Length: 305
Ligand code: SF4
Ligand code: ZN
Ligand code: ZN
Image (cartoon, rainbow, N blue to C red; front, side, top):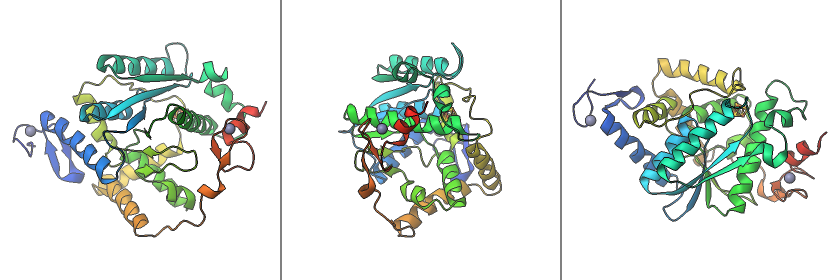
């Protein structure tokens, strides 16, 4: 297989794009494409202050690397969830993130769940009676709460995350299976700020997980290979496996599923049934926006004994 640009040996073959590239041209192509979609979906500009949520994994570190390389003003935030033993998952991912930011001289904020709430994410999840995936749902709720707060308090213009196409297609698959109207309405490359909820963008939403892995490896980014120990058996992994079967038989299927959804939404297939904004108010405990009648879901969780 030869590189389409220079004819030398290709190291990446993207069947979905009918495109093969050598290392040099792949490392040039991917950031250009990311920038193309940042502009297409009007995610942010060079004047904006951007906060990137980094986990230490390939997607978020590759995203931060790409934004930095393209000249965007992007700081990182790492949330230490306190998962695993000393030297375990959270410690190791924090080390990777710190090393990455120090080598490139990038601004990094570290938020420690244990220091802030005196409990690890596992202890917090013990407060709920939710079933199998309770650690992940509590973890997701906590991360959303912290990220919104830090982005607001430190006056960043936008919060960006490293969700790739495989993540987005799996979420879309789940939302479609359950016809989760409100979630479908809110899913997309950009979520506008809304009554105290910050603006969010996902610059990697059109890039396959394997494209991001290839970028991180070819760029020698030192990321954490291990998955979080709580990720096994999650529904999103199951959805990803199902989508991989479709993709295997029909290259490009995942991308079409996602892009056709965005088009259908733009064409008005899903019209807002009610204004989410109208129903938001400030949580009396933490001041963040919530649609619950009283405390926000996070403060409700923390008030349980
Ligand atoms: Fe949190 Fe679950 Fe992700 Fe682990 S797998 S980081 S517990 S959401
Ligand atoms: Zn080439
Ligand atoms: Zn609250």
